[in-house]
Length: 360
Image (cartoon, rainbow, N blue to C red; front, side):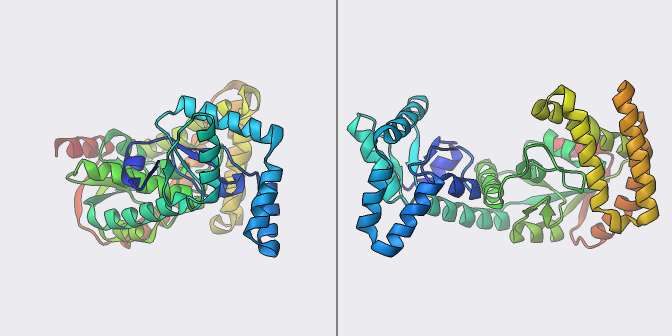
């Protein structure tokens, strides 16, 4: 009724029932996990105080008092419904100890036999960290470089043997990269990356494409081993004209995000929310832009948003995106690119890069 085959759980996207408190789940979990806690945050806090002051026996007794009657029945119903939907699922708490064993026993009493993850969250997390570090050092990575707007993510999407770090971080990788719904926790980001590496390692690929990233993608920190590979490994460079990059940036910063905002906030409020975020992003880099350049770009962006609100036209956004790329992002990225150490394997347009990668 328990397993230590963590690799199978992760590779198979096996459903996991996480019975830790919500605050623990929000701090970090696994891609296929669902949080249906044995104890809510307040109950966990109260039992923790009792444990420190009176010991384990008193804490267990308090837990039985807090989770009883209708509360216990409601939580039992939730666990049973989850298991009906996921009969191949596994159960875990923090260390595979009292909480998960309690839930397993209660379910067993009503005829539901759900196995445990031995060692719980802590053991699974330790496994993923070790695998991620080992695979990052071992797998054949090639770094995809290019100025902002050249469409690196489009190449990643077109190549099966690739890792979308920005997708894992739910962020587009610049001051303008925030997306509705926010980012995963740092632990969630690391867990997602570890699972992606595990799945790619099964295929024994000739090479894995990873986008050139800085240390931070939004607020998600790229693990040190991956940063070192990005800095020193062989590279492919996408070269696109400024006009082409303005078009891609318009799609990535305005058109695509608007569709996301519509899904998240509704049709009526989406453009207003997106406009607020674009202006806030510009304000976040005000010091680096300088006062006069920031004012000019902000006025141009505000005018473009007003025009888009009036008649749906997005052409005005090109007037702030072009100088932003040319005068701010391009010099910054060119400097960063000069710090990279790997051999340039290929250089060409986005379409040429995709064709070269697929041919090889």
